[in-house]
Amino acid sequence: MSVGSTEREFMKGCLACELMDGTREVPGGTVAEDEHWAVDHCLGPFGVGAFVLKTKEHRDSLWTMTDGEAATAGPFLRRLSQAIIDALGAERVYVTVWVDAPPHHMHFVVWPRYPGEPKASQLEARRREEGMPDWDAMADAARRVRERLERE
Ligand SMILES: [Zn+2]
Image (spheres, rainbow, N blue to C red):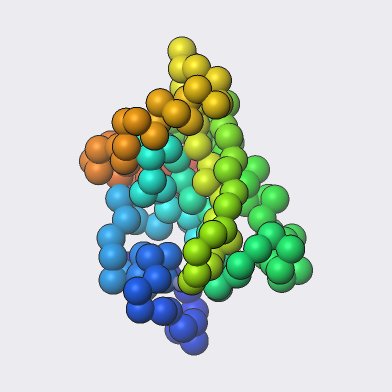
């Protein structure tokens, strides 16, 4: 599935671009998007129900976000974290941000702690040990969060 405007330039070999232009598949597909941001299930070791909010454009740091990206990031994080709580039964939602290697897409990893799980630093280590979650479980979480976001 392709998202974004037709003028947008996608870069071959860039994971985020290839997920947005449909070259590579993400579990459950794109969950939400606007002019500046796209959300899909995280492909890293952050558990079932971890999502990535990423800039559609290449952006190498928080401080180089455009005014439009900065203005919409907060509301998007609020909606997404609420949807993770409501749709998946998470107890807390954490946000991790880093941008290391080019090609850069600013991305927020928005990841859940479920009832009974340890707090953030211990949970992060546990999730890293567990590795990437089961594909079908990620696709199901994506579907539930998309449905929750679409009910607004
Ligand atoms: Zn890219």
